[in-house]
Image (cartoon, rainbow, N blue to C red):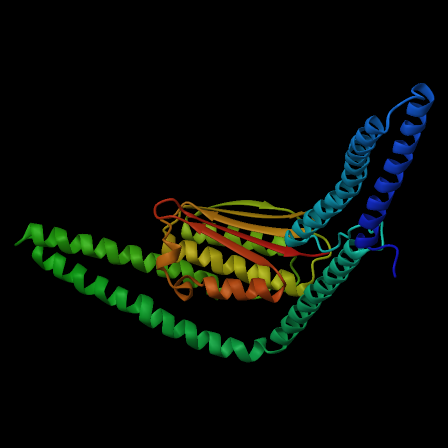
Length: 341
């Protein structure tokens, strides 16, 4: 029988309680006989159970509280540690002071945290390998990308330019004969031009390289924002922190998520200001993208239409978490957290 189990500890508590109660009752009876030598049997028969009950309650309460408080404190430590792990702090370990059932649970939790940490590291290694393979395949992908861009330009922009030409020509012919109709057509011209501008803003992102080359993540994002600010007129607010030791896979995936997030804001949100924040806190990389656009109802939109599925996949590849918050007419907020230690 193991003597370091919870069952044995509680059993010892009962034994100690009974032992101390018996000793105290015995001492009290001896004192009673000394000071009251002529006591009757009736008084003794009443005194013994009263003393026994009193001392059992006192000693039992003391030892019970002492042992259960220790168990309660250790259970709270386990609960706190589980919350720490759920926040992504996989390097933390819980201290094991006793080798009992709770100690075994703590040991299992430490082993589980180590396994999860290794799995996250493996995911990030796979992401690095994927980035290397993608670099090797980039040459072949350039041709396919050009063909896709040509289709996008034809489908999204050239047709709108054709409509602009037709409507503007008709408006010129009508301006002298039917001013009101000409005004309506000019309004349509303005709307189509605005849509074409939004499409071109989004295509600007895809005309850029999809990799960082020799740039750091902060440098690549800064260059991207500066170029798009000049070409699109959107104001970018960058709060970027250089994070040393980021793997190539994490940098590539974060950069592509940023491209996708900015593309959504330009194409769908009609945003005029986009804020990008990148920093490290509590052994995690935090990426946040916020715009002041028209927003959307997440529950009513298909993820694919806004590229959310692609961003979620890239986040999962490096063991991260993604949260997106958006309301109509209140803008959109994207928050990504990736463990790095």
